[in-house]
Length: 385
Ligand code: PLP
View (cartoon, rainbow, N blue to C red):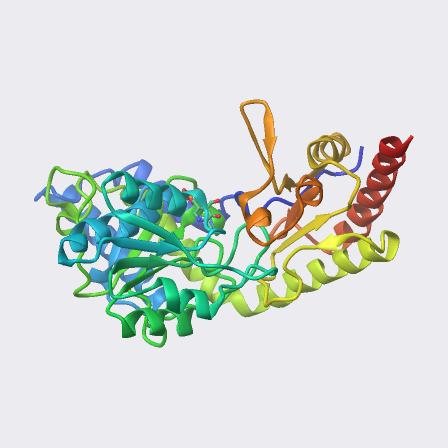
């Protein structure tokens, strides 16, 4: 069988050699606890402080505005719940977001409702772009916090975060963006874009799973979600994961350095793949195609096919991608993102997400397009037989 092709970089990425090399000493001789006063501790503290400075530099932030977390999910939860808990007493019971967010945000929003707040969602159009009129209508002076993802993880749609953050600010609403899929793909600078909080995750950019960071602009009120020691100014108690923070810093620097080149390379691969599939299957639907999109994600439905069996057939032939739908307790639920952008259930149940990254090259495109199209045509024939 030919070499397998990994087309699931939006799910996770391989750890980069440079990142692993930067982390290794902290699993060996540099094992100290950054809170210890002795030399081992001081050495760990220095490495942690430097990692914080480096991540901050990558975001145009100050080091004290970076909180290391265990993942993107924790950063999202912390932003939504932490700000809402700190502010809802000021007659701001609402938290607002979009229906196409990752469950890390939607779950936190539900928690707000469970704790007595009000959760509200703004409308998105058929490409997944936030409707500015709906945003204005929902983000009001009764709102503590609002959250809009920078890049959607299923279809790649990019939002106009500057305009949305500006609008939120004008009503005194604290604005968070989940930039887990955006970091390294779009320009993110806290000096020029007025978001108050922003989440990133290491494993989407070549660091290991289990590390993320939350940018928290100076002066933004936020309650800690955990209780314990005074690490990270009490915002995130618990002994810091020095090795992972160092890994995240290295990965973030590389992502920023390589961003421009990476975007050119990945969008070329994506565009070629989409064109090659549409050439073979003219009625294939590329979701979100009418909006600005991040370069690494494409999500395609061939009507009359079914994503779960396509995924298995592709995997058997060495191609790894994912579905636009999640399989929960045996029943296949169509993706909440595709549902929110008005895609019919049948078309949503045919969606396949392919996401590009370091492991892909030009030679993959033809092979994937050919195989994908052949399998889809066969699935259609079987469905109508
Ligand atoms: N937000 C988005 C947009 C994501 O794509 C993901 C992961 O898929 C997350 C949040 C969660 O990040 P983590 O896996 O680090 O918890």
